[in-house]
Length: 291
Image 1: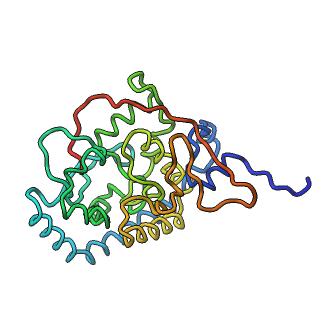
Image 2: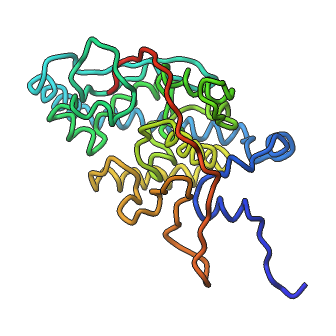
């Protein structure tokens, strides 16, 4: 009544951090709110732009494809492309195509990047630094497996673990709320989580990235897609494999703490905290080789 603006805490958290507080997400949010329901026109527009840019990208980068393929063959033995089964929209499996950046191995390997650092080739380091290893995924866009922008598709082996955890299995003892929403849209070559957060190297970080993915799904729009594409270009030009704001640590949270935004409201500095997530022991199982 005195003119003071009162804002819902959950909405303020989303606005300041760019991610959803999955602890506060309830079934009623999905049933009664329209945030997660996008119009058919929005989906058609997003798909049309992805197809157009994928065709243009394949034509413009054709000479780059040839040079990268030659560099990979000269640098190490093995195939030029790395093909891996990933999970797409509606939990449909597809073959994702990338330039190979690691030495091939016959043994089962971890999917986490930190466990495979010794396998990255000399050319692979440069391809990963400037994200050139992702260029062949324009073919996946043309096939209908992916869009330019969307949540990154999880490897099939990791997906099985995440589904297991999302069902609060006793083996892990931790749940991932609303993980199924991630498969409600086409995965992307780049996404909100990719430009706002670093590589996920364990289950806890995957849950953190899920908060960004759900934010994207809730607020998906043409303007958000354009912003993500713009931020992706900046990351590529900067040669950073991690998030766009890694330099100022705006999106590098400590354990159990939400990231401090790079901007703040006037007044005392505020800290936003989320529920602490205990460490999870990954069940022993075989995995496809990571790249």
